Length: 174
Figure 1 (cartoon, helix red, strand yellow):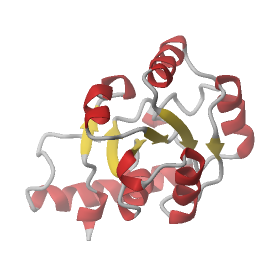
Figure 2 (figure 1 turned 30 degrees about the vertical axis):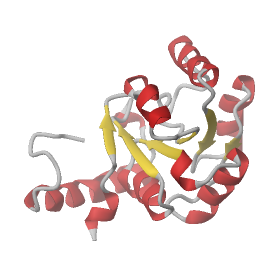
Figure 3 (figure 1 turned 120 degrees about the vertical axis):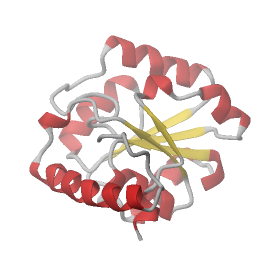
């Protein structure tokens, strides 16, 4: 059961994603979470470093869609100045918003990756849709809301079981 939470890749930050390797696999689109994936929950706009990375992503002909469970106000305030399409109140891991994101990208599942910081929302939702999943370390886990805090506790249980099955590194802490 918990194996559906396993990401295809684990990186520290979005800056560690190998865009050349994605391109070689035929990937042309990135569905990304916002909070604790691109910026901390309390950071309203993109940092200069993130803006530069997003420009690089666009320059290398990748399309990006932000898929967030957060409110339209929060997500639009971040995404609109960057010219990035977004889907707020996504209800991840349910598949509807992932299907909408694929529609916005006009791409098929093998051409798209999902990037996020949560196993129960981003990884599970992406895997259920047959998407390649990339887990990043949460930027500022101490700033998370109650729902995410509950998810993190469930993640710890899942990770414990995955470690016992030899499917997750023993020293990895989330």
